[in-house]
Image (cartoon, rainbow, N blue to C red; front, top):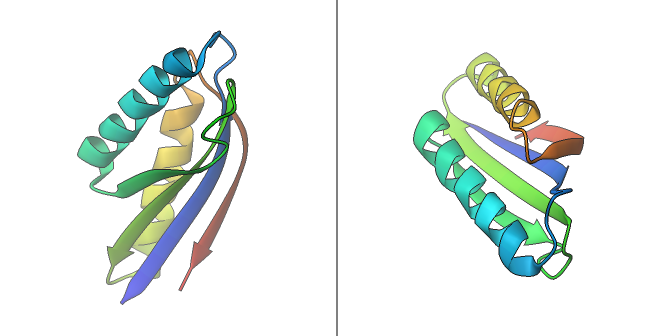
Length: 93
């Protein structure tokens, strides 16, 4: 059993209020969960208006599958216009 944890720092530059940021982050979490069958949570900077740290978790049988899926998630997030991917880090256990 392989567990992958992807930690992403994203910015929502258009957000003027926490409500704006939460709308974008909630939409992203829902889209990632549906498209990639992963669990997603905002784990830091919940009260920051423009920055968020998201954790994405996945369990699978093969390390290669987890790494490939997480790379797909990173590319997916990079293409979302209201977001900017600042940094990410993948760990597998």
